[in-house]
Amino acid sequence: MEQQLYDYGMIGLGTMGLNLLYNMCDHGYSVAGFDSDISKVENLKKSKGDYQIYGAQNIKEFLDVLKKPRAIMLLVPAGHIVDLVIEELKPLISPSDIIMDCGNSHFTDTDRRIEYLAKDNIHFMGVGVSGGESGARYGPSIMPGGSKEAYERVAPMLEAVSAKIKNEPCVTYIGRGSSGHYVKMVHNGIEYGLMQLIAECYQLLKEITGISNEELHVIFSNWNNGPLQSYLIEITSLIFTQKDDLTQNFLIDMILDSAHQKGTGKWMSQNAMDLQVPVPAIDAAVSARDLSAFKNERVSASQKLKGPVTNLFNNKNEFAKIIEQALYFSMITTFSQGISLMRLASIEYKYDLNPEEVVKIWRGGCIIRASLLENIRLVFQQNPELQNLMESGEISEKLNSSQEEVRKVIKIAVDNGIPVPGFMASLSYYDGYRKGWLPSSLLQAQRDFFGAHTYQRIDRKGNFHSQWNQKI
Ligand code: 6PG
Image (tube, rainbow, N blue to C red; front, side, top):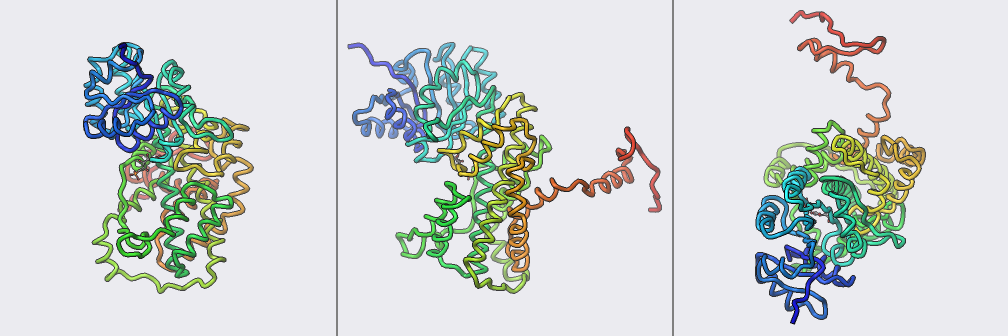
């Protein structure tokens, strides 16, 4: 009997790989799976049911059962493992085969791998996939970058498995080279920023109004029915209802307040620093996670370092309304920072990104999906060349009408000694951006004073150096 050949191959049968594989099968694709952990292959074989799935025992068998030219997806941990898998595949695969790295790889690794495999005419694509476990299973947002020719071959499958908004798939060709992984990194940076802001809302409500978890659930549910509607607000409302199996307390009260991270948010901050594009809300979110991890030091410092006496804010609903506006303001400025970085990175790396298309595929399936993204999409549809989202008439109106609330929230936080680095960074970004004059003239004067670094003038062109009053 002739060996059946399979449409796609999946290497990495962990949670994401397995769920994406079943999602592909749901849409009529046959898939061969392989994992270096053979128990995962056995598990795939056992649970395959009526799906057209093949569990391969080794790489050679896996490659032999794939239709040619092959399309191989990787869902393995980012980093060195991706290179190890490539080294295993390289001698056995053929020109025109496609490898799609669907993990969170650093975009510079993706560029290196594209170049390396292109020497053998193998297409390597960096494919950002967002949506966690259930996204992978029922429809993620997909950000594929690399060769357009390769994309066109796999596009029908990617469109089939992706999330849909108004019947439109949450996938598009992002651009050349590592653009898919770059855009996924920016997605994750924005994710860090939004999560930090939501966490700050939690601390403010909890410590200033003494609110219960049940009440927090109601507030977040209400927020999710308004302009803040988003996946992160929705899951936050649900988190406050969950009980702990071990103690019957609320689970949130049993979780250690020390945040972990795999690094994608940090990568965005690092790259933004390299490109000299300000993303302070993301920087603040990364630092806040880092600070949270110093748990023991914080506990000890809490005995020594003084703060103000907390002034309880009695009207919980009134306070929640102010915070809702402040959060809306900061969500917008966080998206503005991410999109502004993407715009400038697109020029630097020649990605030729289309901001409207990127925002469009973030409306569904991914972790940062939010109804606000439809407003943002419309802004870029009307003006694709917009330099910063905050400049748009519609968005600036939203910011103008909520900026007082974010100031109020920050004042209350400062008066009560509650850290709100995300809110502060969002507001400073806004205030810095809207100021026609900043004190950087003084920085230039200081640089010229101590290092003869020169400065430019407001009244004539050129670089100038002055003899300053050097009395010291
Ligand atoms: C997604 C997420 C995902 C990310 C996790 C954990 O889009 O589905 O961004 O890719 O890996 O959220 O990220 P951290 O461990 O860095 O918080």
